[in-house]
Length: 120
Image 1: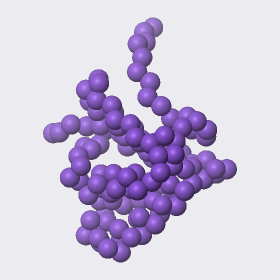
Image 2: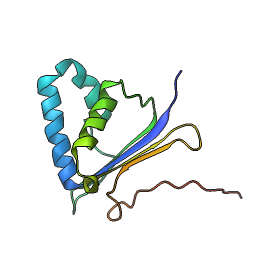
Image 3: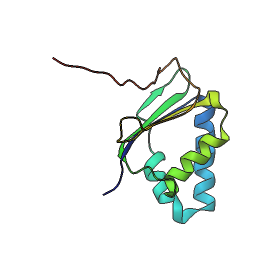
């Protein structure tokens, strides 16, 4: 079993450029760990803004543990980026388990956390 999270990562064009560089480096230097990294973040983003070069990755129902190679890769990437080049949001199973990092916001995606009460 395990604890599952929904995770989103929004990157500016600079962040995407750094991601591509980091992926190439990981493939070269850690080929045994690269398969897991590529499965998580090596594919196409869920949304791309062609005008700005920004992109959003979204993973739902992931076991987001720091000891996993692919999670460590994302953490290392975001640690190396200026705050304005990314926005990372992780929502855990528990209501108050929310982690956010980075300060990229606004256009083109306006990604944010919305917890609300709704009924019909």
